[in-house]
Length: 276
Image 1: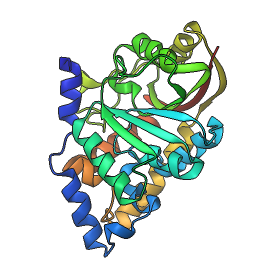
Image 2 (image 1 turned 180 degrees about the vertical axis):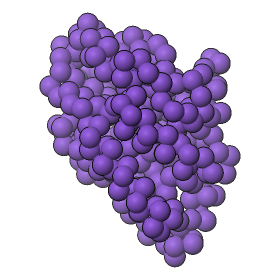
Image 3 (image 1 turned 45 degrees about the horizontal axis):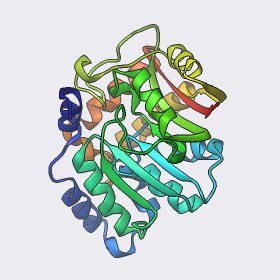
């Protein structure tokens, strides 16, 4: 693991994350032996618009039950479990954060998806998989932590089967601007490697990918932030929520992310690209 990957691992690591989940579900009176995938969603869908965004992206992806799916930057495996449960496919999750991978595996066992999901630690620009291994590569909110964009795209292309598909939901800079820090992916500019949406599109096309979906979801994302902020102001954070991962930094990070979207420093996009 290089110094960048090690720093990202440290940024996201909590230390007692699984215990936090156990205590949170005990507090709401839910036995982990009877948990469903949806019970985990408020805390394991670590990206803007949460489950809603995952459902939208999945509907665009054209996933079939026989697919082998790779989720790069899988976090706690929320998207992976949703895809496996809804489409019957097998999903391999990869994340640079060791604790996330360990907890993701445990959470999958809790909801009976241990056979259809697997998780391992690794680097997105050095994928530990064979050429042409996957039908589809999935990624939500990952590229902002990766400086080597061309290496990232090259690795995705390598592990995809012919005519395989890359599906993503990510945050991009507008005109090279930085967000207000801290944000969920970085305390400051050192680990934030935002690029612009047009640059990403050009890079994918030059690497041999063809766009089937490319859409700006910033307005929907801003509306989501407004609704979440109003709910938090009225009721406070839920017992099971993103604060289990982010701790005391949750509100400052979310406020900065929402503010940066409103001020048009950053934007959110969804993309579906086929390997040509």
